[in-house]
Image (cartoon, rainbow, N blue to C red; front, side, top):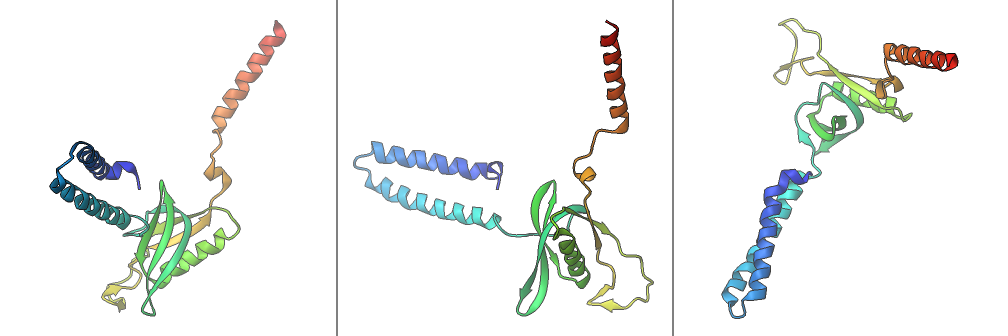
Amino acid sequence: MAFSTYWPLSFALILMAAFGAWVFIHSNRSYLLRWVIVPLSLCVSVVSAKVYDAALGYAMQGELPAKFLYLGHHVVVEKNHKTAIEVWTKAGKTRLYRIAYSKSAESAMDGAREQAKNGQPVLMERREAPPQDKHAARSGGRELGSEPMYESRILLPSEINPKISDAQVRGAAARATDASSESRSD
């Protein structure tokens, strides 16, 4: 995690360490203060470690971005039932998302995994399912097809590193020919 996220915690720990060091250095007979500072600093360090660890290494619940680079996925199985899919994405930042399990989402992720096997980046985009009539079959209180569908495609090298536009290339070539013709005339 970024340091900017936990700056108040870091600042409090530094202040407590400085105060604790001052107490140990400058107080010869204040054993009561030492008995308070040592357990307090231990408690703060344990609590801060728990707070920091709670934010690390876990998937973020919620929707996947509308357009993202697929890095990998894993189906979460709890008590012999598929409950969720953890998808590792890159859309600006690299992030792990946890989405509700559906067969269509799993098949879309499996398709992206197959495309990524040759080492090329795979772009996934959300497309909404076509609207269904009001008398559609229901599944678990939701209409079938109401979840977003994802399409995957291999990213072309030109999309990863876009080249200079044709107009810029023609302008640079024209300047180069003008400069070379001027140098020949001299």
